[in-house]
Length: 66
Length: 467
Image (cartoon, rainbow over all chains, first blue to last red; front, side, top):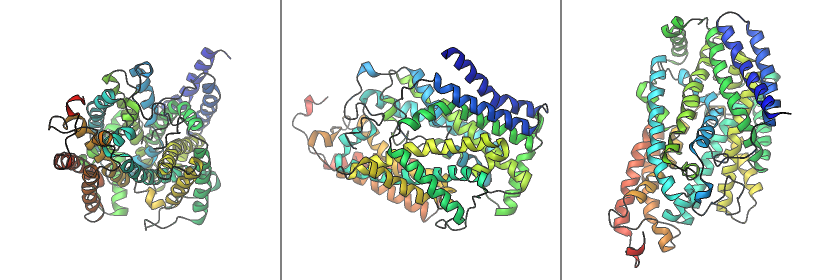
């Protein structure tokens, strides 16, 4: 799949985890809808993002940060 | 440290990083963005509220403390990291001797196990939600939770240990993928929590009544508590004391092309130790309002705000923090017993972490634990600092153990352990807030190291050529 398309899909899925909350804040969307859309965004994120996010590990990956 | 761990992020474990492998600042900003929105944030954030911190103190105290933390990384760690380009462990070995570094590693490994244990608890709290298994904190530090929760901790811990034993790479990739999503979920949790408390305008946010009500509830349940501005500042500054004062992040910044890379932790601090902590605290405030329950159960808190997304986030956050922690602890233990298998030692570390995780009250003391962690490990950073900046100025040799093939530098041993012993006494007997001990111990260690080196070092024959 085209990496650019995957990145766009990932971006949209990320927005699905946050924009519903903002709509909840403004009273436009209900809580259950927020949870459902966020879950959809989560699933799509974890499907689309590995297709384009680099597989190279960084020097920090084995370090412990809290 | 084991020399066979080429898979530990670990090229150039015992040599300077060559110029051809240096990384631009952008790489570090990306690294730190994801590193500090982690499982610990789900525990630490609510604990501020549970400890009685006011909203104003939290917002301003975290701001100031995190700025100090960034400055410490930038001006304490990065210059030495760039000058030497060694890992922390190799740098310590050259100063303190190989055997002393093994002992340091053992202590580090044990502390990592307790940290990982807290993360096992975090993940277990989320895994238990769909099964109705509740996380409850008993009175006593070393009391188990409900049998069902204890069994869940064992299962989660076992899975984490087995995955850690397989190496850190796969989980590191998952963590890298999850990082932007986790940051978004933390923010989402905060926004949803505000709405759950009927805070739906900026005026209501700035009025802060929702927070005062939560504090009043906490005070009514637990008595008058105090977690004031300076305590918050010190905690935020020294939460990562082992990484900056303790110089653990030499291992990261040794790859930096320029000192400006040292500003990169800012993104981690302000996404993780600011936004995520405050959002996690809002989760508890919302739970208090909705169900008058002040149990800081990360799984239940996230479930209440975002349902399945929330608990997936808690599981992944706990897991991706526990994995490198258990892995590093396993390496540390293998360093003590070089003939042992890394896999076996990692499983041992996982077992210790799981046992620690089975005591919910231990995990609930994470605020104190991170201060203790910084107190114990931070002083070695002072020794590195003094060795780098002051030894030659005072007519002494730097990296003395490397120049003399010492396995244990008595100067380092005493400079480390004496202040730490005093610090631990103050923390556990006098019961000061643990993070308060970090800087005094650090300063004392540096001074003692310099004085003892002056007394104990013998001049080296090629002193003039050693530059």
